[in-house]
Picture (cartoon, rainbow, N blue to C red):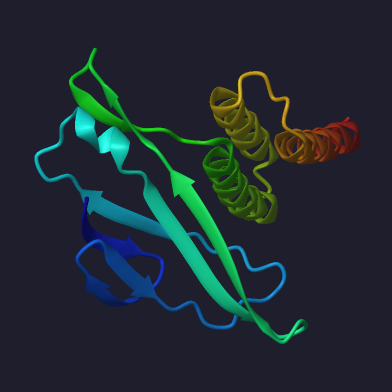
Length: 169
C-alpha cells in the first residue's frame, strides 16, 4: 500500500509503510470522520498476507496516562472480478451508518426549517434503506438504535404533516 491522501485531518509525517496525523482536542460527542486513501503497487493475491494496522495513541486526562487503541483490517483478493476488495468489518459499517445518519440529520433539519416535511420523510426513508443495505439483518444493537432514531423522526414529521392537514380542513 502506498499512502496518498488523508481527508478530514492534516497529516504531519509519512514514511515508508507509516504515516502520522495529529487530532487535537478530542471531547465526548465529537463526531468527525477521517478517510485515508491508499494506492496499491502491483497488487497480487499476496496482499492477503499483509493486513492494514491502525494504531491510535492519545493521552487520557481523566486517567492521566497514554492510551493505545489498535485495529487490524485484512485485505481480500477477489479472483472472480480480478479486483481487490477491502473487507469492511462491522465497526467500519457502523461508522458508515453514523455518517449516513449525520448527513440525514443535517438535511432534515434544513427541510424542517423550510417546511418541506414530505422531503424530510423521504430522506429518512432513503437513509434507512442505505443502513439496511449495509446491515440487511439489522441484528447489531448500535444499528438498531440508529434505525429507531430514524423511525422516531419519521413519526414526528408524519404527525406534523397530519396536524397541518387538520388545520387546513
